[in-house]
Image (cartoon, rainbow, N blue to C red; front, side):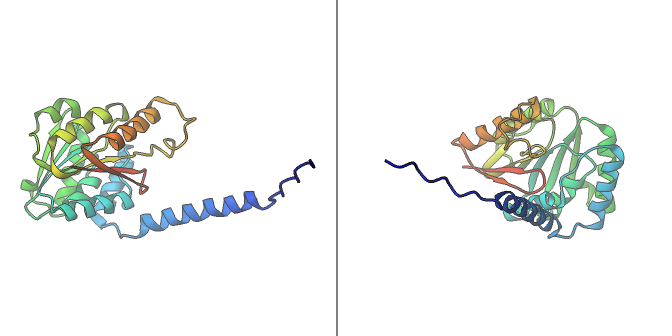
Amino acid sequence: MGSRPARPSRPHARSEEAVIATDKVQSWVYTEEYCTEPETVRDARDRAEELGISAVSPGAGAALRLLAAALRARAVAEVGTGTGVSGLWLLEGMADDGVLTTIDVEVEHQRAAKEAFAAAGVRSTRTRTISGRALDVLPRLADGAYDLVLVDGDPAEAADCADQAIRMLRTGGVLVVNEALWHDRVADPARRDEDTVAMRELGRRVRDDERLLPALLPVGGGLLTAVKR
């Protein structure tokens, strides 16, 4: 029996992969710029940069607004106030009488967020800011009372926060975890640092939880979303 002919080489394979990678980056940028970010949100984002903290990307913010609007959300809870970037996006999508409960351990961050909310014309009755560690605050919030819960904090605490969020959500409510792809490391199994592993495991837990109907959206740093059945 003769030897098998050598497989034809693909001299252009690497260049094709490079083109695909470039196209993906361009598509991601296009997606992020698809919705115009309001000036008040841009100002809050600038303040976040001054304080050295990250904020949800414009694409992720637009997705949060969409989810809040689709749910006609009246009660939303947020772990990680920051300077109010995500809060402003959520409030724009929520019902006019909806209330955002937002939690952050840094008082300075919440002070900046309150300024951002005021600049955007948000009534003070529509926000409830709670200073403290999320895992100390969340257990005190009511069962089944929230339309949407956003978890955007320490990866080491994200799984426990998500567990609390599921308890807090009504049937049909939505869990959202920001930075679910964790700086694009989660998809690479060779990345084994503590934060990446924590976010990867959280993704698996949400995917395998029979109480939830999940999807992972590749906007911003990744939005892990799930509807409570």
